[in-house]
Amino acid sequence: MSNSEQSGQDPLVALAREAIEAYVREGKVIQPSVPSAGKSLQAGTFVSLHRPDGALRGCIGTIEPQTGSVEEEVIANAVSAATADPRFYPLKEDELADIDISVDVLGPAEEVVDRDELDPKRYGIIIRSLDGRRALLLPDLEGVQTVEQQVNITCRKGSIDPDKDEYRIYRFEVERHH
Image (cartoon, rainbow, N blue to C red; front, side, top):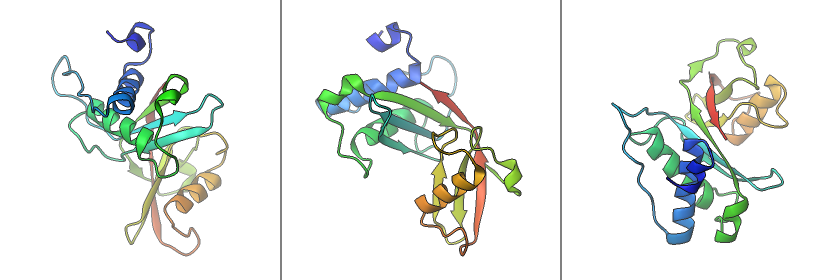
């Protein structure tokens, strides 16, 4: 049992931390342990890294599963969040002890017909333009209080003009692990 599991840390967060530490220290991609019973769950996941002051340090994820299990998805996204988020330089070994990690497991996305169906505290959103551009914003983010803010930020992320482009909105819930 790893130290993080002994300390009572969430198993997916512990897995993300183990993956990041192995990759940053040794350049090694770990393998998940075999699920104890039956077929493993598949879902998109996001791994978010924050500095001690709460500032974002990396966030990478998948809207739909790209691997055979949530555990494999978490490992891949954890390594990418630490090393390949284009907004940040790769995480250094001396940052490992202080980094705060959260893992979001995405539920299925459903198309929204009316913006009244949205709630930025409860639902994340995916906006897809008719020409294929898309962007995602997780739910319950600091500073995102209204549906209008949520839609505008998501459109900006996807280079979608909310006033000129045709697009569809999808909502999803997440299971957040700290």
